[in-house]
Image (cartoon, rainbow, N blue to C red; front, top):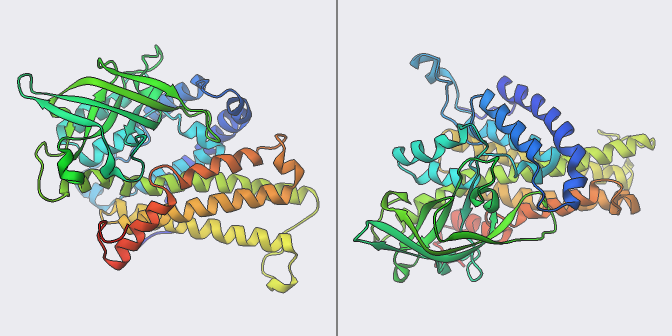
Amino acid sequence: MPIEFEPPKPIVQTQFVLKTVAEEMMRSKSRYYDEHEHEIPWDYIEFMHTAMKAMGAGSLAPKEKGNGHEGEEQKEKRPPIAYQSLAAQIEALAWGDVGFYLCTPGGGLGAAAVQAAGTPEQRAKFLARFAGEKPTFAAMCMTEAGAGSDTASIRARAVLDEKTNEWVINGEKIFVTAGDKSLTPYEKLGKGFIVVWASIDPSAGRAGMRAFVVEAGTPGVRVTKLEHKLGIRVSDTAAISLVDVRVPFDHILGSPTVEKTTTGFKGAMATFDATRPLVAASGLGVARAALEFLKEKLAENGIQIRYGLPRQKLTAIERDVIDMDIMLKSAWLMVIKAVWMADNKHPNALESSMSKVKAGDVGTKITQKVVEILGPLGYSREFLAEKWFRDAKITDIYEGTGQINRLVVARQILGYSGAELR
């Protein structure tokens, strides 16, 4: 099946609706929440939860093709566009405000991990709650003070208590996106959960790594700190402590036995193959917001970009804008390829990491150049340009830094293992 570069009609319709949400509920309040860090945007959260339920989606998470009302023959003819649709939605919301987008209720990385590595029973149990009466959040807990990109250095430990058939987890996790909303019992929110990465056998290295679902309200787990950040300030980023946290045996994602290979670990890590292009899409939404704003300001001052002229006949600003257009569109095509592969169940580890690397670079370069061209007004808080510059940088950091994703790309292309190329 060939890749379609024109978005299908359902995606276009959704983008139109989300543009209104982005303008009215996000962009208009961006500055307020940037300056009132950790204040929760309840109006947005409740509106999005209601809207997603009305659309039949409990969260921003990929759905199986078909809407449940077609016959089997109709479902087969319908091309899979779940991840493509999700990328378009995220890009549109991030165009409004990427921090707000990260406050959209739903599973996020936590649900993605359950979707990727959980059993059918686990998916039914944990993912159904996002379509409940209250907005609900889930989060991924991987990073530790001594283990960022080097997941083999994770020190959180899970030990099976054979008497009670429960896992006992101890450890500290940091930089957890939406960790506060996933664990804190806010009256307006449903019962969320976190997915905690811990080792069931430290001597086995990555082969011993597993992910565990820890539900909000579980004794021994608590939020210990909320980070103050450069950007995405409306989104909470938490530190979480786990002390003798007991979870049921069936809350482990993947096999409970340690094998000689890292198959189980790689299966859970497939979460990132699906979500890294989505992170890339969010970064490109920020870049598009900045570039479109720059074009508007240039037009207001009588500066039109003369597309089609030879490069030597263009002004320096025109060349800069055209270069940014090229960067943005080429990066988006890489996202489209990665999510198309995910939709069609093709291995996409290479394309996933490439799209994230490209988006991280492009987002930083475009927003920086926009601030530069706007000059003092771009640097001031009169416009949102400086905020977009700050917000864009996170694309190159979370869900695998640019450096780590470059390593993934190199290993995929050259055929090296992680041990051979570090």
